[in-house]
Amino acid sequence: MTNRKLKFALFGNIYQTEKSALTQKVLTCLSAAGAALSMDVDYYKFLKETRQAELSAVETFTGDDFDADFVISMGGDGTFLQAASRVREKMIPILGVKMGRLGFLADVSPEEIEAAVNALSVGAYSIEERALIAVETDGEPLEGFGCALNDVAILKRDTASMISIRATIDGQFLNTYQADGLIVSTPTGSTAYSLSNGGPILAPGTGVFALTAVAPHSLNVRPIVLPDTSEIELTVESRSHNFLVAIDGRSAKYREGTKITLRRAPYNIKVVKRPDNRYFNTLREKMMWGADSR
Image 1 (spheres, rainbow, N blue to C red):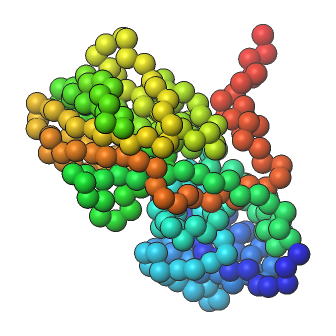
Image 2 (image 1 turned 45 degrees about the horizontal axis):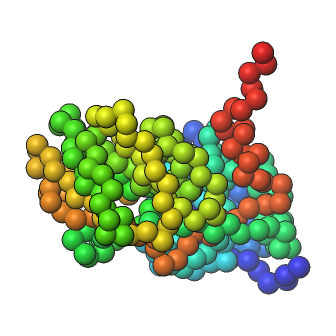
């Protein structure tokens, strides 16, 4: 057990006005535990304007200018991904507090926050290391956060015709995908966009990536699982002469012929897990396996 005051950095969803009242429960719990708290400035302003919350003891920060023992993400998995993009190589453990119904990363309910904070204070938790995909274009790292915790998707733009995506793995030609897009997923992201396109579920820590086509032209195209030590190179041809690269849902436009290189990032994201929060329990619940009473 530690007697040191814990420091938390808090991120939240500024678009969930009706759920922001739950944040006060978290703030009250952290205050009662004697924790030091800093908050993303946009979320701070949101709470002040919409909830008139009492935040006099809360510091604020912008960008990645913060330090903490733990990060708390208040929202869903999307908010968690945004928090991870701000943590980056700081490798501060992230606790996801779910404000909605569906969440694989954000799996602590507001009602459980007191027990979760107490568990952190006495060290009754574990850390899961989650791999990221680092993205380069034409050999140069992307500006900003060029890593994906969930997935990197190469997609056609708007209603344009399908695109051709030439994929090589460690210098060996794999396939030219004629499709609406191609998703390269981590195990963390295998239950997200990849799954909705028929991709495999990958358990965390398995050390692999999955390639899943989006609406492929040929029925023979199937997902493939690769070691996460692989270097994946993708080039695109498109009738519109451009395409999108989406990193955890944040997209940018590129000209056809741009070479996209994907490889495992040199650092991981640390996810806080309490002893009673098990991956396969969460998977079974979210996938509703066994819910059919027939």
